Image (cartoon, rainbow, N blue to C red; front, side):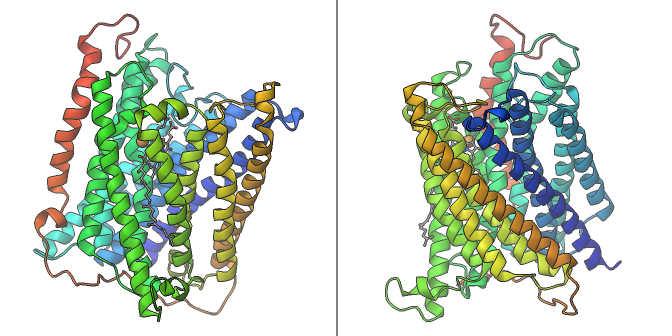
Amino acid sequence: MTNDAAERKLALSHLWVAFIAFILACFMGEYQVLERSGFISAMDSPTVYFASVSTHGVLMAFVLTSFFIMGSGYYIAVTSLKQAVWNRTLAWGGFWLAVAGTVIAAVPLLTGRASVLYTFYPPIVAHAAFYIGATLLVAGSWVWCAIMLLMLRQWKMAHPGQVVPLAMFATAMNALLWLWASAGVALEILFQLIPLSLGWTDTIDPGLARTLFAWTLHPIVYFWLIPAYTAFYVFLPKQAGGYLFSDEMARLAFIVLAVFALPIGFHHLYMDPEQASGWKLLHGVGTFVVALPTLVTGFAVLASLEIAGNLRGGKGLFGWIGCLPWTNTMVLSVILSLLMLIFGGFGGIVNASYAMNAMVHNTAWVPGHFHLIFAGTTVIMYFAIAYYFWPMLVKKPLYSNALALLQLWLWFIGMSILTTPWHVLGLLGQPRRVSGVVYNNLLTLSWKPYELMMILGGLILLGSACLFIYNLAKTQLHPTQEVFAGEIEYAEPMHAVASLPEWLNDITLWNKVIAVLMAISFGYPILQFFFIHAPGASPWGF
Ligand code: HAS
Ligand code: CU1
């Protein structure tokens, strides 16, 4: 097998695992919204519901994302650096480790012995195999991180003083972000949850567990998001027929995103007692800082679209909008993604505002927020990247562009119909993490029409997801004489970048900055569990 074919196989294998996890989880999602609504009483089963919702969450949040990011990351690295994957055998080792972890975790999940949701907060405890599987999945992703960082180093040594391609800069930033982010949950699993689930200790401190999980929980969402932003910056402008508004601004956005995603996780703990309000304030301020690179991104993407529209003959203030190639899957996805980002991001700002968080925390508003901004804004860009890469990966043209456009519109419509009622229900007081919403009183009667809308939204999403898988499978398996010879095209900035200061061209400095910020924001809040004796469990339980 040539280098090129072997690398395509590596990327494709990761992407298929991601999308198989995705389609299975979509079926579970539709079941869950039906079960919870209480419309079909025969479906009523908290046991099956929590097994399903835990599996759905793990498949979407950990399996889809990790495998997608690894697969697309390898392909971006080899095509942007024009360099082979560093140690392909090791890359396959990471892949199989992550697959093994997924399978090991799936057994207790599907048999109802790990119904602990994707956040697995103690004191609920799963079978040890769940935590061991999750650890192996994360360990597999660490292999990917190491390979990305080594490839960046190799390239920099071979090209001293040259500008690192933006796509690789963003991918390496994401690898660095994930190494830091996953350390929190790794500590929680290794020192608290595995010993507890194996019976080596009787109790652990759930406050410490939640603090360690919060270390991971915010940056993980940016780990998921960065591939979407990468596509905004490095694929969209060319696909739209224009130029990237600014390469330097994009780098700055990725830096702020990665650096400030990490020290701010306490906005998930605002309503928790174990951390003092001063620390929550500090993390709260950081949360508003991390919204800035998104605003910058929104501005830059819109500017890139405007440049493209004008180059294509757009006149006047808004003429460019009509001149955009709306039938290009990348362009359409980005526009729909941005629309969902406006509302999903607005919800995020509400969450991050302490007083309003008290109103929405643990209500249906929160799954409304993250389905819109993750499953909407982020996952629609995973589709876009898949549609863009598939013909290059399988060397055949996309089976149907029309079907792909239909699928993207359906995803957008379905997600809007699913998440708008979810937000409203949250404001009406419906709790999250419940297996049924039928309380037989007048207040909850008013929830019914919203539940109905959500079932419809879920159905549309399920249809869209099936179309997506069908199109990819057909592209790969459909017999055709036509060979797709196109290559990945990275956008050029409006003003070419001849040289950059080292801080915009490397991640070493940012690694140090993250270390300092993490020590400040998590040092004392974690150490306090060890030196302030509180009643109840000791931190590690022994
Ligand atoms: Fe979040 C909870 C705050 C972004 C995911 N979030 C969650 C959970 C998940 C999640 C999974 O502060 C649930 C965790 C759990 O299970 O408990 N989130 C934020 C903030 C942002 C944010 C401030 N979240 C995300 C992203 C996610 C994600 C991205 C996944 C990919 N989130 C929170 C908080 C909680 C939370 C609290 C805890 C809630 C609780 O109490 O439990 C920000 O990054 C958002 C910034 C975005 C904006 C939008 C700007 C708009 C732009 C659009 C430009 C468009 C233009 C026009 C100009 C401020 C950039 C377009 C025109 C066209 C023609 C198209
Ligand atoms: Cu967060």
